[in-house]
Image (cartoon, rainbow, N blue to C red; front, top):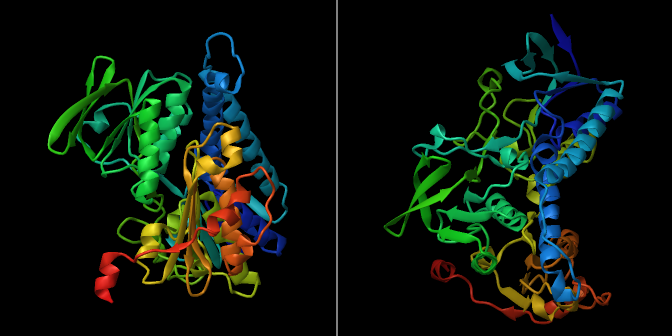
Length: 468
């Protein structure tokens, strides 16, 4: 016998629980199905534990350099990884408990533990229990991608999930992957006390960012003692007594790196391969991401996909925005869509990167008349006072519409300050509004008007000129 609901939410990541509660508040009977832990990647092994561990790493770094600010720290700086992990665990448990209490206390929500698989377009099976609903929302997220590197399956390696469970600090950590996750973990473990080698197959770290961002980060890592192998492909992996040995090919030259731990940070894979999507008629792309339209609807009426599994953003904030789009489609004016979303993200190195809209490469290739301004962080008083002057600020403006197209802030508090530019982009107002702002001294944000006063025209990309 099938149990009937008004809506079924498969997966309890950042979009699912909030969507379920909004639906329930609107009078719907909702089933929420989660096979593991409430909160998804962010709460359990992403944002919460990694940023807590990064905070511990920064505290160690600050203690080591306290003498630069006239503060004496006597004795050796010691890292207690069990306490580092306990701090993260407490935050995880608090978030899980809060979500569980919110869902279980709502009279119109039924929380079910188990793995859901479609048996028909609007019917799922959970451990022999059949549930049906006219609306089904998929929020199953993604997991670490494991590439077919020879020898990898023969060793015990870390995924980012396993790394955040660490209670023993590796003496030499090898990180495969120089994207956002890889660089965050590399710096974090180096500051906690590990020797770190970072292997990136592309010619530079953070290959999806502008080259000046990559160059700055790579220089900082070199100064801090992180060994970066850029343009190096991992060809095979072996073990040698108590070591893992990674053989790389870099510009035709083979090199073997020996460490005691290997961390994979080579991308993500959507959790769509064990949902029985074929029984529902839900389609995926060649990478496994569920295909949705601009309103997050699949090709099957009444079936939606939210969060990382739809391929439209691997972030907590994009997942949350997905649920807002769906709610607007169901109960609002139906105006919110993916097309209206301004891309925005941060990378939590120290200093952090805050990015919104187009980067410089994208702007040069857009065919628009572009104004660009760039300013080093060492002219910012807040940065100078804290002796944290690494990085720069950069903003891009459409010369005709006067709208801000994008911004990059790589520097102290860049992940926070960039929201000022994101707000103006969302409002669609002229950059001159910010240019004329009176900021508070001494802050990082007060330098944004000064930055905008440096706007100058830039040349478009050569291929754009040729196409015109």
